[in-house]
Length: 318
Image 1: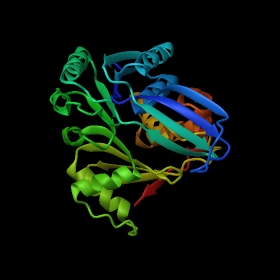
Image 2: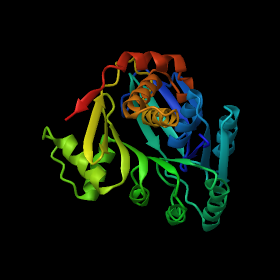
Image 3: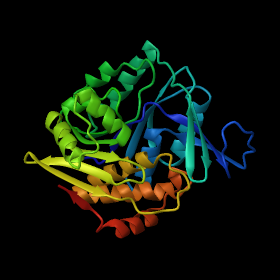
Image 4: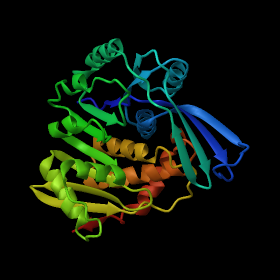
């Protein structure tokens, strides 16, 4: 079976990264350093997966001005792409990095036309039948016809999701992994009508069990920056939960840490690693990402060092 992963990162961005010694809202700042590069959840995931040794096929909508630059940059890394070219410009994400903190300013996504939706369907049909693994990353552009995506035949495919909006049909079909952050998890609980008593010591077990009993999700992972990463599953209808506190690292830039975690889990899963090993690998990758300015700067050797440091730190949740 092919280990190639079709990454649907349908809402990419052109990243502008401003580095400041100190950022104070309302004041004039002179920027000491600027970087610009291709970004967005799908691109970040694909880049990191490629660095780890995986084989991503990145599908995304690319618009005028920055679209060609994104395509050329990703091609230069040796990553295969299936672009859908659109009329409106790709959005720009401006990030201010100061003292280890990041402030993001994200433009509205482009609005797709009916013809561009038809182009998407034709393009994805060229790859869908030969793809066994599909990863959905992030939001959809405005005007995206999600119904035509939901109507595809999911039989025999392993589906991984790092998103919260427009994913209900995917979750109902069954996914290998749903990776979301704590805010997105609370939003999911609200949608499912599951009570959120976060002060309860049984909060995680009760809510995760309820989600897993309602939806055919094999692994549910919730991230929360420096707090423990928590992963849940049902094995023979019995709850299993584990948590892992990320290692302490010198934070350079957190943007894309969740995308890097997702890439780490995807890679670990394709390598046949077990549930806890996937969590360890993914956490190490996300931590390594925080240490560097850009996802493409992650060093595989550093990931291995962090894995070794946290391999015995996994805790079971009762």
